[in-house]
Image (cartoon, one colour):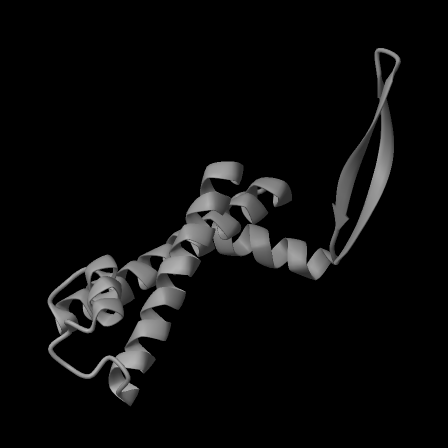
Length: 119
């Protein structure tokens, strides 16, 4: 799959439009998987569904962490910083969960920004 650009002239304005090229096999796979004959629309559907699946999986992780600790990440983070968490904030389990939970929240924000920008 490659990306090239093509200059388009509309009313005395030149714009560069990206053109995506892919193998016929990949195009056939996309249209076959999605049952959409237009390759561009099929790719769009695959990407939007991927984004939805990733977002759903991340939300499940957030819910699991919140259930485990009985609080939101913001409260967990605050209690760790204040030293008011029921467990030692510097223990392996707490630090591991803190970093993983923070990563999940960061990825959620990233995917949401992509969704708002492109969908």
